[in-house]
Image: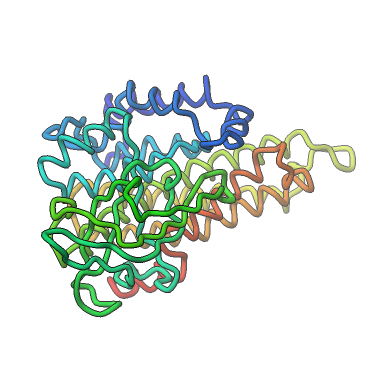
Amino acid sequence: MDFSFTEEQSLLQDSVQRFIQNGYEFETRQKLIKTEEGYSRDNWASFAELGWLALPFSEEVGGFGGTAVETMIMMEEFGKGLVVEPYVSTVIMAGSIIEAGGSAEHKEGVLAEIMAGTKMAAVAYVEPQARFNLADVTTTASSQGGGFVINGFKGVVMGGPSADVLVVPARTSGDQRDEKGLTIFLVDAASPGISKRDYPTIDGGRASEITFENVEVAETAVLGEVDNGLTLLEAGINNGILAVCAEAVGAMEVLYKTTVEYCKTRQQFGQPIGKFQVLQHRMVDMFMEHEQAKSLLYMAAIRMSEDDEAGARKAISALKVQVGKGGRFVGQSAIQLHGGMGMTDELNVGHYFKRLTSIETLFGNVDHHLKKYSAAA
C-alpha cells in the first residue's frame, strides 16, 4: 500500500509547517494562552485566508472537499506547534455535524460563516453522570408552541468561551440512556436562559460549563432528525477523535526528537547521557510508541476516507488506545530524561505532556476504547 502524500497534500503539510515555524514559536504560544481569549483572532483570520477552515467540507457547501487524510495532515502539524486555536471544536466537530445534519439554511448561514472565520462553534455534549456514554443524556428538550424548550447542564465544553453557536444534544423522548430519543439542536450561545462558567484547561485551552434554563429554540434549530441524533453525534465525535489523535502523534514526535537532542548534549560523568545504554533503550521505546501510533493513525484516516463505517469505528478505538498508552509513555519518559527541568513552565516538554494527558481522557480513555474495540472485534 502506498502511504505517500499527493502533491496537494504535501503542499498542505508544507504550508502548515511554515506557519508553525514562522509565527508560532513556543514563547508566542505561551503569551497567547495568557490573554483573555486564550488564542489569537489574527491567527484564526489567517486560517480562513489559507482555506484551512473550509478544508474538511464538501465542495457542494463551499469547502475544499478534504478527507480525513487532509485533516490528519493538518492536525499532526498543529500538534507539533501546540496550537491553541479552537479548530477541533469549531471546524472538525461542530462543523461536520452541521454539514451532515443541517438544512440548506444552516449550511448557507452558520456553516458558511464558520468557513469564513466570522463565527465559531462548540459541541456541548458532556454530562457529569454520563462518563463516556454519548447516549446518557439528562438535558431535555420539550416540544412547545412549534419549537422546543431546552433545560439541562453540559460540562467541559471545549471552545465554549469563544463559541457563537452551540451544537447541543438533548433528550426529546425515551429514558436517560436510550439510544433513540436524542435530538441535536443548533443554539445561539447568546440565547436567553444560557449561563456559562468559563475556565482554562490544564493543557492551555479554554472550556465552559453551560447551564440551559428554559432556552427556547425554533423547530428549524434541529440538526438531522428528531429522536435520531445519536448517529450524527457519534460521527462528529469520531472526527474529533481522529483530529486529536493526529495532534497527539505530532506532539509525540516533537517530544522524542527533543529528548534525543537533549541527551546528546547533557553531560554526566564526563560524557553525554545519550551514551548510556539504558537511556538509549528508553529513547528507542519512545520512537517505537510514536511509530505505532502513527501507523494506526494512517489506518484510521484511510478507513474514514473510504466511508468504511464499521472498520472506521474499530480503527478509531484502536488508535485512541495506542495514543493513550503511547502518549503517556513518551511524555513521562521525556520528562524523566530531562530531569527536574522537564517539569518547568519555561521548557516546552511539560506542556506537550499536559496536552497528551488531556487527549488521553478526551472522548473516552484507554479502558473505554478497549471495551469498544473488543465489542467490535
